[in-house]
Image 1 (tube, helix red, strand yellow):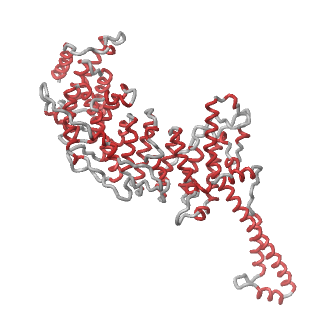
Image 2 (tube, helix red, strand yellow; image 1 turned 180 degrees about the vertical axis):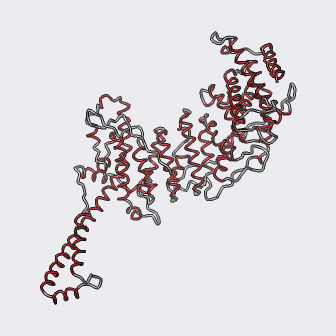
Image 3 (cartoon, rainbow, N blue to C red; image 1 turned 30 degrees about the vertical axis):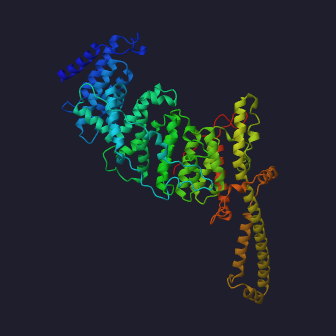
Length: 639
């Protein structure tokens, strides 16, 4: 073992004595803060970790220890990597030789012992691809050979009913180009010219490792995404990707194909295909979908990757829709964390099919679980959306407001109520909205709560923002208010009917009391009274009287109380001036009367959500008004 370690260190000495063939970057010149002794110590640690990780050792360490050594090697490679420095190149080649040996020990059909080890190997291969032209050429030749074999990629088997663009069944549908058409420019890449290999041939382990790169889809996706991650710091705009990453189009073309196929496999679970190239196991499918956002670091690919996900989704299959929404939510959140503008995920949103149109179509579904999953997706994603996309989602919800607000399922209504209260205006306190429905239902007067607020201290931008949010909320405010007024009208009618029933009950009680007095005076009168009663009535006048008295007392005690507010006339004018019925589209088996019966229940539930919002709002200790700088935490909703 000592001889083996000494030989590794001798390689480092030979690398240091090798003359530099290319100009060394300024960044690689001696740094006063990094002394020669410190560099030598780092190289020594690297050599020790490299030697200790080789599979020549009779007994391999535990996974945790090996993972720590691999991390140490990778950290050193990434920190000292410079494509124009021979020493860095030598480090990469040594690590690549280690990876080929590690891969050889696990057999011809596997890349590595664990997924973590596979990720380590992919990182090293990506560095080798960037730093060594010969290795790059060997990889590209294998990719060309795999690409020429068209049987490696098979279009997902889709249901004719759920097939995209069957999603689009509107009167004026948007254009819906297929995913295949988006890949046309990549499929027309010219074939690489023949290349004469110079230098020694690759070892058998090297050959086997590079062959596995095109045979294992998970390994290739890890290689591609780590390659893009390593190059991202040198990319300032999207067009730089093709100059920074050698043969970028060829690599991305296969990556997009894998995402498209795995997006289908995620919910269809058809199993790995019987083929030679880019085979993905169940774990590989998850890995591909997990790393797909790395392709969207180039914002020009964001729309294409999301279209691949939508195209293989069966809109009539609840499982398929659930996987689609879960994946889309994860991607959008990760893109937002990476600083990618989410506007890149849609194109001409009024003409081209996008995930915004997909939300509109999913909200038209009659399937309860599809509606719930769609609303939960919107509840999670709305706070991170840019202004334009949030307005588009609000427009979609506006046209489906009555159908969802008055839905028969409690969870559908509950999720939508929370979206209205917590998500439509996520960065602004609801007191600023001066909402009529908040005043009517939650008894919160926005003008009163803001009476001590200093508007003069606001910047023009914030003033404009508040005005815009009020204007957006006004549409939903009027729709909810129209339901409130309809329910008040229905309650008034019910009140009249109940008062009439109360008067009739009182008359029956008086008549029975009169009969009872007559019965007490004359037995014959009592007999006559019993004979005059209906067949279903009780034969005993005392019991009958007691029942009628109880009914009369109950009716008097439960008379509805309708609060009359000073703004009633203002509310009626606001509703009358808005053509709110245009937001409800009747269809066969779905009339207004079918959903109106849920108005009272839904308004009570919505009022409870509003009250919960304001109950969390802290008040200023001096003024007693809401502290509008502190927003209440939105509750976590689960399916």
